[in-house]
Image 1 (tube, rainbow, N blue to C red):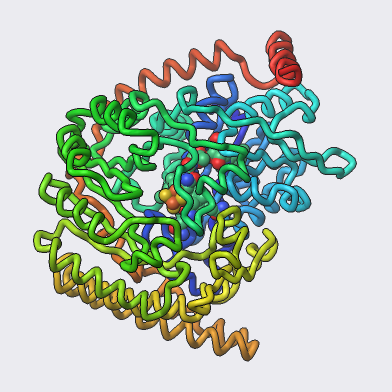
Image 2 (cartoon, rainbow, N blue to C red):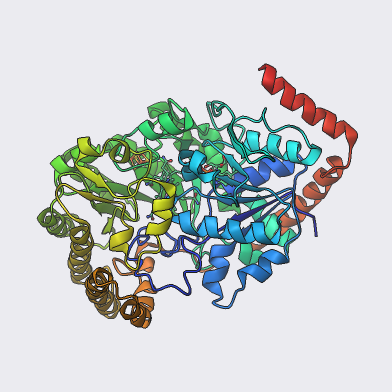
Length: 600
Ligand code: B12
Ligand code: SF4
């Protein structure tokens, strides 16, 4: 087995979620992960590819998924048995990992005290100065594109070079002083980033450790894969830490970096060459202009895997016709946020219902396989009644367009957090928000509150945290009834969901009362009931989010051929670039790279 230079670990949201009584709520019901957020960032793929091409083998361990899969999985024994790399990397990308990532970092530091701990991702970037104060954290890599600086960092750790020339790095020296190196502007486009997930499949085979590489629980049954059209966004939704505003302030990026459309199409083809699972094209392909969208659609013509396209705003019939011509199995995702255009506008989306319904009509006429419409709770100007009225609008949509079961409305809360770096977090008064937790430590603690009501880092001028929680449950019940009525879920399934929603709502109230009375023993007694609700998707069954997938989910022959070829390539690369403290000339090359950067 190859000795890894970097071991990338993905933590659960809360450590150890298996032992704590926390009503986690429907915080992840609209994404493939469970509420412990076991999915690791796409960046693990691109970082691994870049480092391996420079002779630094990378191992990925999805600790969160392993803990979920096996209740007896012993993290400490597993970590103790890992080989000592040049560094351990942990993502603190999504803030909901604030508790788990720091706890896992502490365990790793205790068991491998001489190996530096590196953290990275959006939340690490936002909180880098606070993060470096935790004794278990040695290095924080900031920015939305860290492939290049992390490679320089590996060189520095491998050849004992100074750290002060490495862009984007926040670090602590031997005397315990922290340093913030200047930020380097990320690449203007994504042409030199390698988004080849097959590399991780090969690494899983190489490390003989498939369970550690699985992106989320259930992936083998529903192998959905994303392709990323850009880093950044042109839009400015109020609660989003990946908005144009947030990217500008956090990552110094003034406009999105796009993947060239033909490369994006290649990414899609690569996935389609090994699986029959759906592919999600992340980011509205019209963001870079009609020409970009057209080139992408020309380049993917004829790909038959189910392909999900995101729309940030209404689309013309002409555009949808082009999508349908190129991707016969296309599905659409649109986040309307609210039925009320005024609320939608306050959140940052300015279009009317008539325009978006025209888009829906056209998509259905043109043969869209699935049309998923998302609504959110916790928006500016949104009252409790407005949330319930959204359910009324969902009914209207189903009655007008939902006869054949292709239209699926979903609702979920903006939870657990309004993103740091977002407009609503930075300028709460302007958007009518009240932010309860501001620091990383406050968010870390909020994650171990006994109920998601107290984890929420905000309330609005229009709803308290309790109202956000209870309106979510009430709207969830209404959506559930609608789904039975329109044949989107079967009645047995719906009855199970209904039971879980009612129980979730009761538990939220009971915990509210017990917490106010500081009755921890009373909360602990609820553990079995809380565990049962946590184990259920309460707003929508995960299977309802899933597109139908061919019985043969993987193309085994292509996969085997690919693995064989890639194995040969990998061995060759490793021989051509002997890693880890082996050759003087490599050290010289690394010194040169670092010094050219200082000059540049
Ligand atoms: C795609 C996406 C998703 C995909 C995730 C796909 C994936 N596996 O990464 C899906 C739809 C599943 C998703 C889910 C969620 N998302 Co999301 N998502 C996005 C989106 C639209 C794009 C992200 C992106 O461009 N990534 C690409 C680049 C930037 O990141 P990357 O390549 O993965 O990683 C690079 C760097 O971040 C860094 N890095 C990352 N990790 C590490 C680790 C180390 C050690 C190092 C050195 C570097 C490093 O280096 C990488 C390589 O350059 C953004 C919005 C936006 N416009 O940015 C929101 C965003 C990132 N998501 C967000 C949130 C909140 C979530 C959820 C928690 C929502 C929820 N409640 O369900 C879940 C979490 C899911 C989980 N972990 O299980 C917030 C995060 C804000 C914050 N600071 O917490 C964002 C900013 C906006 C939003 N609200 O949607 N999301
Ligand atoms: S939520 Fe809005 S701002 Fe954030 S990534 Fe999506 S479209 Fe862009």
